Structure formats: structure tokens, C-alpha cells
Image (tube, rainbow, N blue to C red; front, top):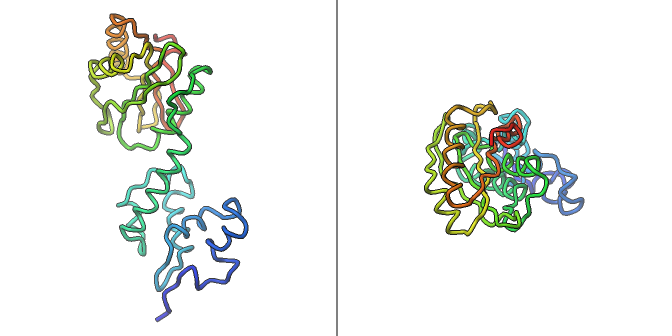
Length: 229
């Protein structure tokens, strides 16, 4: 039987960890970076082989790979739960770094700026997630809140929860957002009704609904840009 293959057994130029130390992260391929996370292979596959298989599972797209679950990854022979957990944790750290919670950041560039930020956070979810950004009078984001999570086709959102948090944070403006796992960016009638309901209720407290942004892999949809607010 062929001895188990580890990164230490490879020629030095092929060792991802040593290559990273010598040349930096930018010189490594996606499969080499995954090999570092995997750490060691099996009797038949090197860590690099497994990294390539993982990328193929996500159609060689890191965006698609970010949607993979532990169950998805462990379908690959040689990827157990521990390795799958490590990969999922690394992908989540990358997502969080890219998103970078915006507390204290001013919203100055309209829907384009905030739409890109929200898309980074929400687009990889396989179920609907409803979030709210709370703003102060200087248009700075002072709080980010996940209000509800639901199924593939929808989530239930209670306006009272949104407004209670706005009062608690002394917010004068809010931006609503949720994702559409289907990829379709068009708002449903339920989306339009909920937006109207929250806007009317917020008005009684002098809180302005600045926008409602729907995000998916395809981009974003702004209620404000489309004249629906």
C-alpha cells in the first residue's frame, strides 16, 4: 500500500505551506490554499488532489464553494467532518473580512455602496434572511441586526421587533434588506406590503425607512431606486 501522503512528503517547491512562506499567499492557487487547510491527504490522494476535488465540487468557483455545507464537503472521499469544518470556517472568515461590519460607516453613495455590502453578507445563504441597518442623524450605521431567518421561499418578519430595536438604538433611519436564494431580484407582493407596513409604522416615531434592498447572486434591487418608497 502506498504510504500516506502529507505536505511534508512533497518536493519543497510543491509544498503549499513552504511556498506560502517563501513567496506569500498571492503565489498560491486556490487548490494549494485548500491543501493547507486540509493539511494531509489519504493513501491514494494528496492534500492538493483533495483541494482540486473540492474546487470541482463548487464548479471551480469560490463563490459557489462558499455555499457548500459540511454535508456537501464530506461527500468527497478523504474529507471528514474535521476537514470540512476547517474549510467552512475559513470560508466564513473570508466572507466576514470582505463584508466587514459597517458600524460607524457613513452611507454616502446610495444603494450601490450598501447593496454591495449586503450582497456580500447575504448572497450565500440557501434560505431567506432579513436584516436591518440602523442609522443615526449623521447617516452613520450604528447597528446591524439579523431580524429573522426562514425557509427557501420566505421568512416572517415582525415590524415591532424592527422598531423596538430602532428606539433602543436611538436610530432615525433604517435600511431593510433580505436575500432571494432563487436569484430572482423582483420583489414579491409580500415584500412590497411588508415595506409599506414598516414605513407607515416607523413614521409614527419619526423614523425614516431609507431603502429596502433585495440581494442575490444576480446583484441587488433597491426599492428607493425604483421609486417604491
